[in-house]
Length: 416
Image (tube, rainbow, N blue to C red):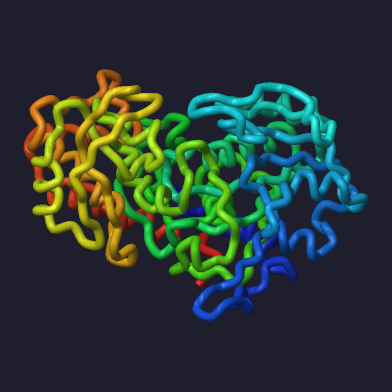
């Protein structure tokens, strides 16, 4: 990463965060022991949409783009004469959320508003810039709830849209929402650019510990060849140690297999099982908390508990996915029960589960396409586990890369 471009923050992201919409956040009134968070959209609306005045606006969003009373921001802005909203751009799963993993809604007119909806999923570069140009927008607004993991695709939709906005000569505004699993620290391996895909475009940590506004600033300062004209609208009331249930905000599933904040808590570690022949729990009511395969027995849960991982217990579990891997079959495995989320390390836990699964079940195998390398962002995790390395050894292998990323990351954080 080049650190020489940090000075441009004063002219881009920092400028958007320094004015009235970027005042230092503070705890807001609410129930005892809770923080009442106002999202970036809440603050934009409270300021009369001044950042959007005189602009033809397009919004990149999905079902999570809601107000605190769960009205969608597109519906709210479309009904407000102060906003000239002319287009909507949908990511994976679609603007209204009708598509499963790996799908989108395509181009259509939204029945509720009549607005044209354009599909951004797996589009990037000039083709995406051409969509922005054809839409007639001047300013592109991004407002999507993230899950805190590098391989959750919405942050790369953000990245791709920023790159395309530069090519199309469009202004870019990012509205912030909480990182649901806190922003206390970055965890896990940092992507090797040789493994860049849509589940990881640039070298950030597996659990990045950032909000979308902070990521936008990082992307602009470190990775974009030409910076976009960026404005960020931060939240008020959110602190880096807050889990989602401290925010007072409603949880809207950001994707079909992210039903609760508990899912997000484990996701940055257990999503690694997508790279194996075991089920990652898709097709159950507890995706990424239930893991298993045909032939797995209680030995795995016993081995996982014996690993002494902080903050989590493992229960021997049996389940029958209604879709995805092992559809309609009863499989054995484990269910994660996080009992101390402050002590819990999701990425370390995911690595330990891979190791104990491989050691306790003879049928363990990586996916033939080595998808695990795309998820971890390197070959080291797979090859070290295959060579018999333990959890401490695997985790230690990324320590220096993570320290370097954490140092760069610190320059772009907006919240104490």
